[in-house]
Image (tube, rainbow, N blue to C red; front, side, top):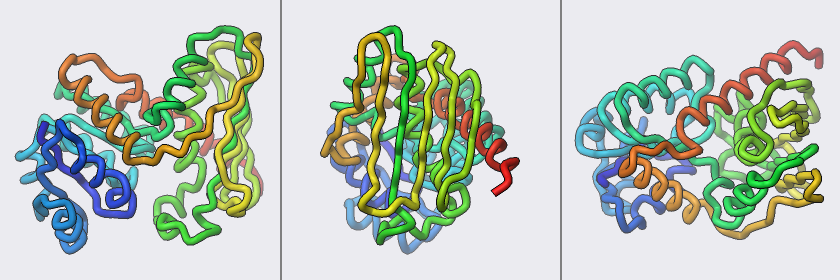
Length: 295
């Protein structure tokens, strides 16, 4: 499959470009970015071509991987789908429900495959754990803490404008939801959403299964407090999301494998654009509650 990369930022350099160039079944055709010099630098590093015109890249490939802010990703993803390209997208799918819905509609209309890269869902050990827990009944409650130190360390993402604007809810919230939804079921109601220190938010969710969950999300945690924990409690007992040392590149290679499989079979992947839209809808509902809370 011929694939192109849209985006040249830290995530494109750290994860997407290495995964695409190292994948045995992908022909990494080229890179497009909003800055031509950055596109050339990244393309040269991986022995591929820099494109000045995004439509020219879309015409030369079968699929695109997108490593761009959500407000930029969504319209370009819809444009790529209309050009007949399969989509390897990043989370969150879009900055608004309307933009996310436009992506899903374009995917359906064009009949292309889509996969949204929720990192934890494509790490081998954690993917297996999620599948195992999803097969059990009787979950009573869950807690998810996704605490990053992006804004309190020398993270390469600290200057990201969209992260500064949207905060932890939209950046790490999708990760937590990608673990909880397949196990506890869809969110029936965002029962509460309150602010914590910095960009920290606390959510209480009611799930279709009858279980409840609490989420604590932050990008402003002290570095010593950073980390992710997901705990499930129910009739099967207590279980924790396993820790893993696997990096983003192998996980993204698996996401590309999933896209290849979906394109070949026509069967949607569980983390397709429609799932990305559902996550976006939950985030938007939580955002509305947070906007109405007096700080």
